[in-house]
Image (cartoon, rainbow, N blue to C red; front, side, top):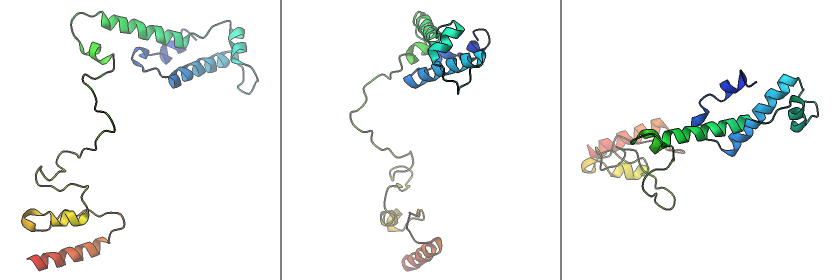
Length: 164
């Protein structure tokens, strides 16, 4: 298992983010491989300790991953000068984040101040009234529960014939 399975399973483990879920999955993977090697069925009522005693090994996969991560961290922090890896490894961004829920921002080009386009968060009547020079805009987005496309085209034609 150490020669064939572990190197493939732990490839590039230095860059993993280990959370409790990943640690549990690594332990489960190791035990599953040991049971496979010993030909112990998953239906057999054998504990993990029994399997470890039968194989005469200890759980090593998670400890190996953690030691490799620590060694890689020491390697990058000892590098001379400033490099991108040194900035990325702590996982924090410079500056402080605002308190509370983040504000909802529109995509660029969706506000009326940019290129004269309407905001998608306006109601349909607000979009019709906020046209250029008082004209109705051609960008009317259907909303849930709105009229059918035929009815919208008919009302749009009536509106243009009244203004034009």
